[in-house]
Structures are given as structure tokens and as C-alpha cells.
Image 1 (tube, rainbow, N blue to C red):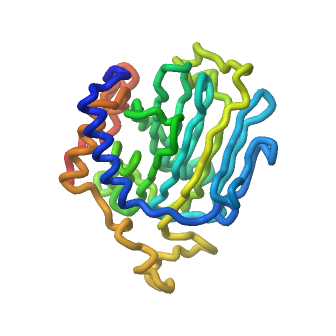
Image 2: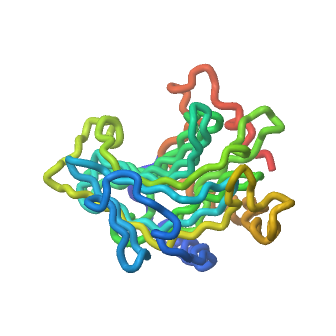
Image 3: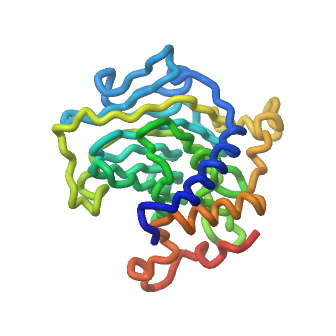
Length: 297
């Protein structure tokens, strides 16, 4: 476990690495082309600037949410998000891929709010065939409420990689050959929401939402998706689909190289605050099998 504050040297180095990484990210699209509002209505979710900006809000009446028109079976997803500012305790802002049903797959970013001056917690999880319990949590090395930052999910047949401003923070490898489930057959939509989770989100539910600070608002811009779009039971990356190779692109084959592994290790050593693979109190009978196979190529 690390403290909330990192050294100035560490912060400067990470900022430098972030600038290098984000220079490779390109954005496109308008929100009304890719998403529709599913909760909260026009009072709580707004598409602004000709569809280039989307905001979601939470008050004591309702939260808000949106989801993608497209389903994907593998994708590289980028979204720039500016989180709820000020006293955000009890709120959760989400950004995730998910299928449906009891045995659903899911790849989660969740941002757990906190009291003013205390850091956000970035909560990640991976569900395979309805089973999660694969949480890793991080402090961020910047103020996520002051400006937009890029949060990315890379999901391909080799692995799932979580990235922040282009920096890998977590990798979940495809270890099906070892009998470990991997999300590779259920198409997923992209979802995002802002909701009241003050029964657990901040200090285990001890700190509740201060509704006098509402409405709470998070903002989104510069969505980009390179992916295999699932439609009528067929993937745009299937070998018999037109332009299947072009649809795959470099992201489809991407894994962490030696340099990326070093960056991820550095982030985890300095900013990870929880890892299900080391929680002996929660898992006294032993960890998930993938925890013992992290060094496999």
C-alpha cells in the first residue's frame, strides 16, 4: 500500500511518460452518433457543443447514465473524462464494457469520490462468465477534476490492458490454456454512469453524500473506438467480413512490451493501494489462479 502523496520526482517522471504516451492517441466522433441516454433524461445528461461534450449529473432525485449503440467483441476504447469536483464523497463515476445476463463479462473503470482534498480512488475489475472479485485500486498522480484525462480499455484476444493517459496500469492476460476464463465470446457495450453509492464507495460507506453540494457533474469528450463491431451475430473482424484485417488494426495484436511492462510496474509500485492477488484476509484459502501466473509471457 502506498500513501496518497507521491514524491515530486515521481510525479514529474509520470507526467513526462504520460505526455509521450498520449501523443499517440487520436480521437473522433460525436456522442449523439455513438451513444444514447439511458437514465436521468435531459435534466441530468446533456450533449453539448454539437455533440462533442457530454455531461452526466447526480442529485437527490436521480443519477444519469448512457451506453453505446455498438456492441464490440474486442476493442480499443479511449474516453477523456473530467470527474466530479469538490466534495464528491459517496459518488461513483463509471466507465466500463459489459455484456448482459447472469454469466456476463465486464471490464470496469470506477472512480470513487472522496471528501475535498482527499484523493479519488480508481477502482478496476474484470468479470468473466459472471465472476468478478478481481479488484485492483489506485490513487491517481494528478487531480482528475481539474482537467480532462484519457482512460482507455484495450481488449483483444491476448489480454486486457487498462491505461490512464496512455500509461498501462493493469494487465489481465488470456490464460485460458491454464483453465482460467477470459472474456472472448460475449459482445459488450460501453456504459458510463454517475450514481449514489454512499453505502460503500467512500471509506466503506462511513462518509455519506452531502446533498447540499449537488448537482454533482462529470464531463466526457473525445471518445474513440477501434474495434470489432458485433452485429446480427457476426463480428466485423471475422475472416469472411469485408475489411476484416483493416478493422483489426495494430490494437488487435497489442501486448505490453518490455518498456510498457516497466511503466506498469512503476505505476503499481507507486500508486496501487489494493490488489486482490495479495489480500490474504479476504482470500484465506488462496488467491485466484491467475495471481500465480503473472510472469508468464
